[in-house]
Amino acid sequence: MKFSSSVVALAAICSSAMIGSSSAFVVRSPTVVNVQYASLMSSRRTQPGWSNHPSTSSAPARSSVRMYEGANDDDDDPANEIARLKSMAAKLRAEASALEADKAQSMADAAEKAFRKFDTNQDGVINVSELKQGLEKILKMELPEKRVNDLMNEFDKSGDGVLRVDEFVTVDKFRNRLESLAREEKQIAIDATKKAKTEAEEAKQAEAILELINDKPPTGQDKLLSVLPYLFPLMDGLQFGRFLLAGEDGSNPVVAVIALLYTLYRSIPFSGFAAFFALNFLAGNPSINRLIRFNMQQAIFLDIALFFPSLLASIGGIALNAGGVQIPTQISELGTDAVFVTLLVTLAYCSVSSILGQEPNKIPLISKNVEDRMPNINDFVDESGKIKRFEPREKDDENDKDKK
Image (cartoon, rainbow, N blue to C red; front, side, top):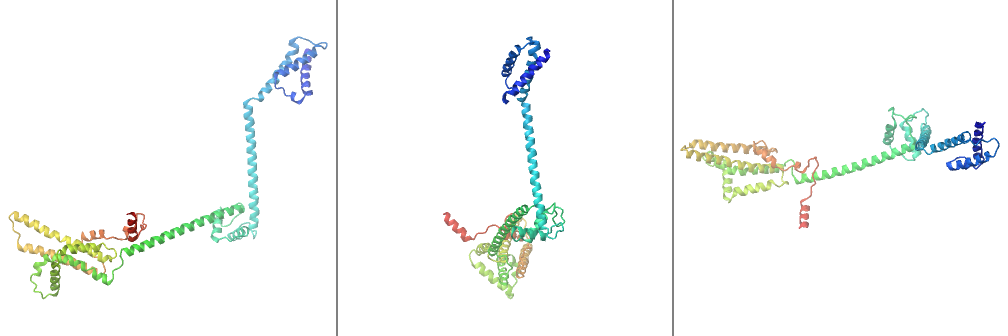
């Protein structure tokens, strides 16, 4: 009987909460629960048969209140909040995936629809001709064959030369790729124009350098003029031929001409120095043909080489005389004649090669040094093989005046 009274009390609490306003259904405060419970207990005590013993009447109701309060405390647990947020995130991801799937399906449907329009012969594939006609019809523009072939090669994943349904894309993708190809072709054209302009400038500079440095094949006049510089070492080397030429009576025309030239050469004060500086100055003029400039430089080196036999003979004579040894006249004459003959052979080789239009660059030691001193087009080329910038001398002079 006591147990049934407690059940009746608990049911009364629930009934009172349900009959009241909807906001009273969720009990948030223990104070409100206790007030309702006290009011109910006061009304029940006036009824017959109600027991006031706390163990039989109030304990079940209070236990129920505590259970209700514990349920409300679980709603404010952080773990429940985290679980709720995770559930919302999973729901958002599912919705995003669904949207992506819908978008992909829409694109696939659009691509399939465009495929059927492009496939004019309805054979299930699109060749280059059909792709070109379809794009030109939709884009209302004429497309180059090369650009359409590039499109085909890019989207033809199977490599069979046609587009199938699974390889076909939307018209927008074709348009975007065509625009990209157009930009690439435009950039290639710009680069080609720049390259052509650069090559034209380099060719112009190369022509200017060739005009500056006369490395052209020698003309007949150049060949004859290229022999004249070798008169300089010949005049200075005649001193070594005094023994060989002493027996000549002047009947030999060659000897007579050489004697006349030698007389004129020696009649000019400081003729050796004058000839040296004149040849050295002219050899630095790049507008003179290369063969003439080469022979000028080589003639200077040959003349310098004649100094060493005289120097060695003088040093040897002094050393032998200091030792009390006298050099026989025949040996001295033989050495002098050998130098003169060597000079004549060398000059003959240089003259014949020059007449034939070939550089006499086979003289040991001397020709190599002459080659190193000769300016050529390689002096105007940088390390990368490009022609260096060339500015006329007049422009350099103007810049120097401006600086002053």
